[in-house]
Amino acid sequence: MSWKLAWMDWSCLTAFESQAAADFHFDPFTTHWETPSWMPTVDSPSDNADTSRIHDELYTSDAWLEEQVKIDALPDVPDDLPRAIAGLMFWSDATHLTQLGTAKMWPLYLYFGNQSKLLQGKPSARASHHVAYIPSLPDSFQDFVRTFNKGKSGSEDLLKHCKRELFHAVWSLMMDSEFLHAYRHGIVVRCGVGITRRLFLAYLHIPQITPRIATIRNLGNCPCPLCLVHRDDIHLLGTAQDQQTRSEHARTDDEDHRRRVGLARDIIYKQGYAPGNEHSEQFLKEDSSVATENTFSAKLVQTFEFNYFGWLVYVRREQLSVRGNTFLSAPFPKLSFSSLYYANVSINADKCTQNTLK
Image (cartoon, rainbow, N blue to C red; front, top):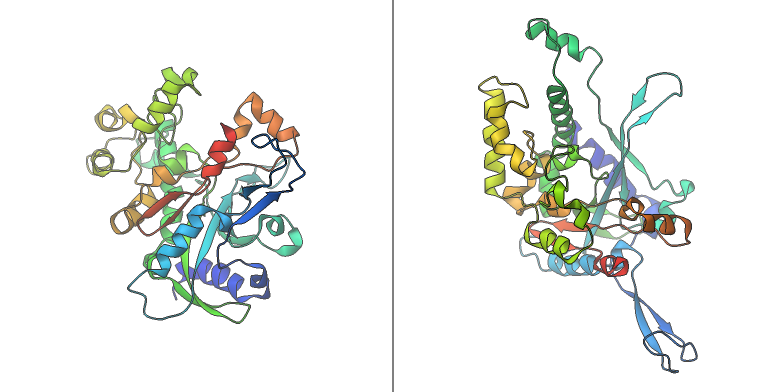
């Protein structure tokens, strides 16, 4: 077992083998609320009972149910062990360690979607698993650049490019060949409840969307990581025209996109031009791409037909508007948009949430 897989060996296997796994959900299900016959509803004001679907946990979503059916039908699994999904939920946020100093840290944590969000919110449940640190460029980086640049400091475009490259290099180390094998074929784990299962890894959530993880430029002509809406049309947000743009011009990590990024990288790394030069920008500027190879694209697209643009999720999107203040002050649960991926399947996980916000 290589050191690069240690985070999965420690966090994933240990969590599912521990007694805490007794509270994990391995078999998805649905929950419903049956309105008492004496309680009138908006749709049925009469005294007729009404049943409503409850959308509260990931393992009760349609996506999880559909994925369970698909992994149960996989033909190339070498055993007859019960099969289940191990939902990986990554969270991260850079933080300062002191109020007066400059020391900072960027930890990466892992939660499991198999565990109820009510338990995840309890510190005593120890639901958070520390898996990695994302390093920052050292303070001496500019000194290093000046030694190779005739005493000149690196440009802002160069610094941004190096930060993106470093960020995705960390994810590349974590997603090595052993992880990809486990991602596709599953891993055998004797769970804490005494049942041996084959667990199939599924990315449910990664740290909140930033241009760095979406590999798009900050404040570019197309600032949305999900679609190609132009910044001049942002004021149309919420209109039918905006909805049409989102559906008809969604971002796709297709062959053309990867080709243009590859050409821009060749100009930088093979021809020696600095990031932000006009020669590479001709391939990137139109859709606000950057000359960084996205790790999720490089690792998952060929084998799993993975479109990482469709997988990115907004965290607490409702906070971006005046209506968000209502959500923040009212006793409503936080709503988020998420997608669940396994192999070559991508399904919207929280379709009900979209209807809720309409």
